[in-house]
Amino acid sequence: MKSQMTHILILCYLLGLAHLIFNKSYFFFRTSFPDLNYKLIAFPLNYININPHYLMPIFFVSAFFIYLLCLVFYKKKISQIIASTLYILTLSLLYSRGKINHSEHAWIAIAIGICFLNIKKPLSQGSNLLTIRTVQGVLLSHYLFSGLWKLRYMIGQKNINFETISLNHMAVTIAEGTLKNNLITNFLTNNSFLIVTGFIGVLIFQISCIIPILKLKYYKIWAILILLFHFSTELSLGINFKQTRLAILLLLFITPILMDFEKNKKASAE
Amino acid sequence: MTQTLSIKSKKIYFVLLFIYFLISHFLVPTTKTNDLFIFYDWALFSSPYNRAIDISWDNNTKFLFRDFNKVGKHKINDFHSIYHLTQQKNIPHLKKYTKHLKSFCKCDDLKLVVLSGQEAEHIIFKQKLKPIKTFDLLK
Image (cartoon, rainbow over all chains, first blue to last red; front, side, top):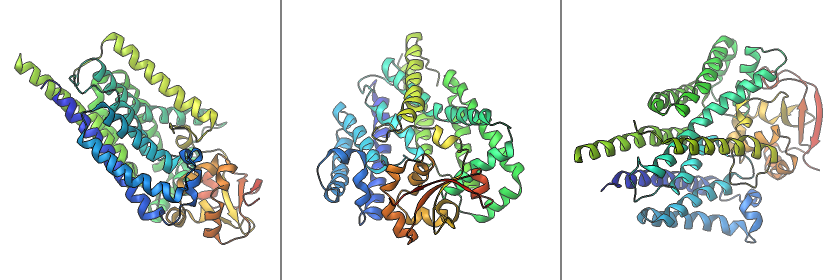
């Protein structure tokens, strides 16, 4: 009874990972199945002497069934480890030749974190609390370091010109094919003060993420700020961070709610 | 959420974050290896590159990321990855995509071009910039 919330949390994390793996498998079969040659350079395949034409579909189909088994036996430590490894392996097969989508980073941290959660212990005790805090800290540090790298880039410039810097950032978004709407692109480039204001706002917000990393009680406020940040970047620049938003909901909303619930139950029992 | 870490746990928490920082921001970017299960390299996307770098064909008249970014995203496998490999000038990895890029551009010359200007000048304002360096992707 005392570790009921840990059960729910582990199941939530595993369901989140399952959603991503099934999504990736669907994406793979829908788009890349007829054209598998490029998969030859995916990292794990360099060391396995099997034709990727057979290996990749076999991997995805078997990953689907193995993951279903992991969900059924979610209480077993081995299931949690296999589920995490499967997720990381899926990413490595799909992305190791180029660059991973940034929205997957939070989930790699969750996948590793699951392996360290003890299902027999309450959520808010000892190693479980430390694991959750570390995963939350890693997630928040993504925003902090992103801001710090932006700051470092600015300091590295001979003349700090906010307009040029923010336009260069926007150019990256356009070159990657994220910003699709020509009207928004033209409007933003013609009113560059909007991009400059947005850039400074993002910079301040990202650096401010050091506050919840150091002071844990501010998690909820920053969770709302991060969600607002993602919604605004999606609306203005088309940058879609669906997976990260899901991770934030799980890590910074559902996890604290479960912890509070456990604490209240404990208090009422006493 | 009022549960707080003990002093010992807090120390471990900060040490773990520091180790993560070292791996993701120093080890991975320095080794520049893609053969790692940890793909953290935040410097890549959080700051733009000082020089405009693009993939061009037809004697530098057409540029993949300047002229075909919207179409390319849907027609080329791993467009996002190709963009960052281009910015890193990672020719060996890029060469593995040449077949797909060639079938997209239907051209005989495919080059990685480093241009004499900033990303915004090339991508947003579409200025004609002088190529400083070129790398043939078909050789």
